[in-house]
Length: 429
Image (cartoon, rainbow, N blue to C red; front, side):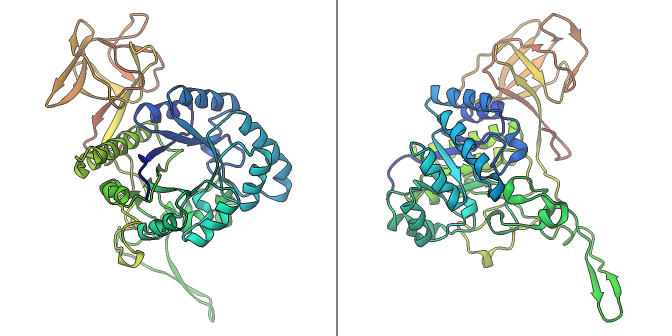
């Protein structure tokens, strides 16, 4: 069994989110540069230059970056894929995340120095398939989301040197580990090539047809029941981290969400970092982590397949809504100079705004003509007496369209966030 401390792996949709994930507690991040990555929309936010900058940033802090090359190429793309592998390898990531067996072979030939991690898209559920990929040179398997913890343990027994990574949080696919073709059929956007339109989240109207006399009946539904027939709830295994780590079979805990917000990247990294650290310190407290995770946008949470068998589940689908719910709005993000913030929603004078800091940061209380940073009931807040731009222009309020840096009453750590509770339960990120 595995005695090494488990890795926390977070999504990085762009350079800012990469830095946020690391500062808020991730041991490693995964990201891609557009081509051949399953998150093309997120990947476009990285260029080869900024991806290299992200790798250097991570390595300087003892963290890792895994590059996604997990799309399924057409014949016409293979020569381009070879060049892409060469370029990505030259940036010196800590591993490639690959889905197709042919691409695994290609990566081993072109960049044998780079570890290969097998994507969840390969749907590994048993030690026989795991053995095949191990023999091909794969060092880590991201097992299928549909696997049970019992089967993860069985794979580890047969392949003790194979690293095993599991998803613990994020969006779930209605199909089998992302093998859905609905988007391709309806929208011409191919999920396994990175451009899923998320058709499963749509509201559908059901009809019954009689082919003999061409009649069509609209099936009326009780309002709010059964409309979103493909819509899965989001995975949330924070309450089960103790069971997972007690198994000794898991090497890395993975959070989904390269296209999600900076706030999501921060909260999920910090919550799961706390859960992991508390586990090793013998003070695991699930309610603490869930309290934070529920502040993020979500479609409702489920513990999915890892702990319970699928036919035992009654809570894995959300039939009521596709829009994400959450309890907080992010109002500001502290800039690199640690003396200003950028508005992300709206900020008014004389409001108490909660401060959400990166992992392990200590704050210093202060008060002056600009405002104050203070602690109340164990939580730090900021309150602005004046809203001043860096050129000392005073504003009545500041909103997200304003790109001016706003002065802080005292220094705060880079990438600290300000948040306010949203009474109606929706969240703007």
